[in-house]
Amino acid sequence: MLQRVSLIAGACLALLAMAGTVRAQDFPNRPIRIVIPYAPGSVADVFARIMAQDMQEQWKGTIVVEAKSGANGSIAAEEVARATPDGYTWLLVTTFFTASPALNTQLRWDPVRDFVPVGQICLAPNFFIVPTSLPVKTVADYVALAKAKPGTLNYSHPGKGSTGHLGFELFKRLAGIDVTAIGYRGYPQMVPDIASGLITSSFLSANQALAQVQSGSIRIIGAISDGRSKYFPDVPTMAEQGFAEAQVTPWFGFVVPAGTPQPVVERISAALETALASAEVRKKLDVAGCDARSAPLKRFADVIAADVALWARVVKEAGIPPD
Image 1: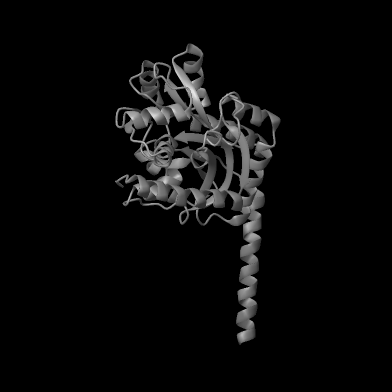
Image 2: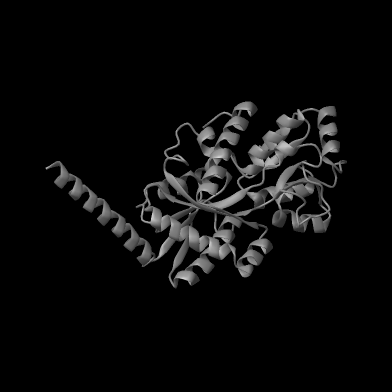
């Protein structure tokens, strides 16, 4: 009797494995939806569409990019976490994804429990900028001014939990300075106030900073990137200026709901890696201000886990109250 039960159990497992293989081989056979947690036209939207175009061409299928902003990414994340785990709903993730557990005690999703990492797309370096009206040219100058006039300088960020927010809070702690945080609803409202001098510092991406640098309204005093950035190669990194721990470069990647069959996850990851190996895709990401940087499956899971721990520490040490 026991032997018969074992044979039946073995047959069932074999059938399940075959079913997973069949699903992976057939995948995708209907449109895929990528949910982005920001507004249409945002850098996240641009990055998602670049990847979607190449991957749907690989599969001769359809990938739809859908913007679902609000609640610092939680609306999009919760929707994808509750989606059917069949590989047809993806979430584009960045800093909000790993910072949210420390910032929201009522969070109804978890970045580790509720999702499976597919792969990282790219790194999007930030730049430490000040208005040219501020008499500083280096990070050391900025720190000296902040210490000489505590509480008089400020910095802007596009939302609680963004890299511009938590990254600057990390820098403040490392530098031992008192600088006031000013939150905005997004970059379109924020950048003009930096250019005018109303805001005295911020972290901006290459694309966000370029026009203002060219107009002469802002100055870049530090690159938050892995080595000198190709976008502004003459700008020394934060590490070169004594703040290596503040060298936290934003990344973007894809996750799918927990429970998605592993063969399907691997098929998506393989297509993502093929796209990232394309010279055309890399060029498009580069133009959009993102440096193509692969980190598939387990490597991306490690990136996510490390950032969850980092931002939890930063939030605690900075005394940022959770919502």
